[in-house]
Image (cartoon, rainbow, N blue to C red; front, side, top):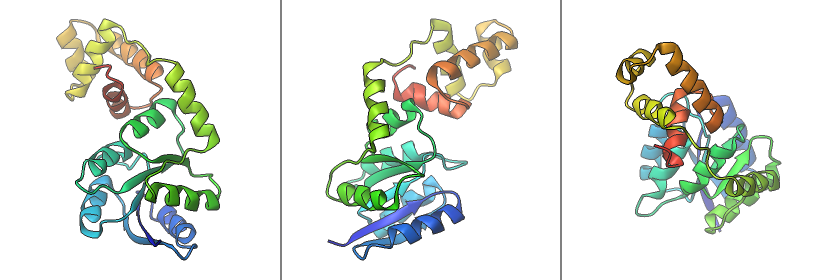
Length: 206
């Protein structure tokens, strides 16, 4: 069986390295590359690959989780494998919930990449042992609980409001807003406003 793959990563050097690894087996071929989530969606429509290997964080624009959601919603969706350097529990769960067939770290053995692609193309899943452990742990531990005020802050954040605007809306100081955001980031295990919104949405916290 010949397996057709599209690579999605915002770093050309990374894509070049991955292409050399993925193209090594005769039955797996990289048929296209994309540097952004939006470009990936367009390329998939044109080329109809069997598997899309996508980075989690793609710079500006939509991230790997959103790419996965949109691709899996297609009439004839490709399998999606997330390949990233990040092993945050909430992001792993969010990717799998979005429909990813696997979640791989970039230090994975090249042979395991081929195995993951083969399983994904067959409709299966592939999770390295360390990722499986994290998934099990995340399932055993429910999503973090945000306080009522923290939920209000993240909801306003999701509308694009600045700290000053959130403070004005909630009749608190900007310092208080920053304090709430620090707590939210810590609870969700994220390091940016965009990721906080995404994880909160994926976990049904807002």
